[in-house]
Structures are given as structure tokens and as C-alpha cells.
Amino acid sequence: MNIPQRDKQLGITIVGALFVAVLIKFFCFDFMIAEGNSMVPTIPSGQVLFINRLAYGFRFPWAKVYTLRWSYPRVGDIIVFLSPQGTIAVKRCVQLLDQQYIIVHGENSEVSYDSRNYGPISAEYVLGRVEGIK
Picture (tube, rainbow, N blue to C red):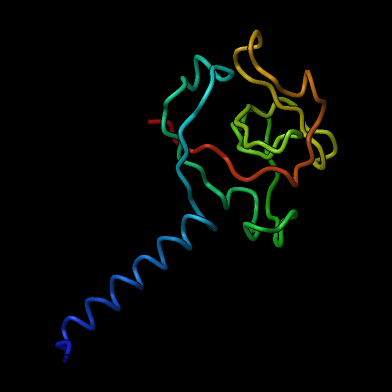
């Protein structure tokens, strides 16, 4: 069975586009859906968040530290990070401790499990910054 040349090119184009999309998702930008009420009223549960994975540097998805770092979270940034429990969390950076550790708080202090409970987190645990809420 012969496959026409244009069908081969279309297949290569589709595979290439999927490959680029996966690279962008894992290394540059991501979307996630907010769960829980710790960031209410700023981020209600169910909202789609646009995450900039390159906001503070470059890291491989499987790495525990940044390969290249060009910035650190600033006070007021809403960040995505790996919590001490091993889950992905979204909170606001409220204080920096020598740029190596940060204090994070949820907007809804009555239900938020944050640095008030587990203390500062390493800046290496930060996965990105929330750039948009839809």
C-alpha cells in the first residue's frame, strides 16, 4: 500500500506539532484548574489558571532544582509550587527570606493550609507564576 506524499507530509506535520505542544506544556507554559477555596476571592475553585513556567528560570520537569535561574518570586506574586506534602499548591508569596526561602499564604486564611502551618518553602520548589485567571 502506497501512502501519497502529501499524506506523509501531513502526518509529519501533525506529529511535529504535537511534539512542540508537549515541549511548551512541560517547559514553558501550562494550564491548571484551581481546586479548593484557599485562594478565594482571588481564585475561586474551578477557575482555569495560566502558569508561566519560565517566570523564574528554566528547570527540567523531572529536576528538583533550577538549571538556570534568572529571577525569584516577589512579594505579591501568585505562585505554583510543590508543597511539603508533595502536592501542587497555589498561594501568594508574602515574604522572602534571603531569596532561598519564601513565605506563602492563601487568601482565605480560615481554610488555607500554607506557611502559617508548615513554615517557609524553598524557592527551588516553585514551579511557576500564575499569569492569568479565566
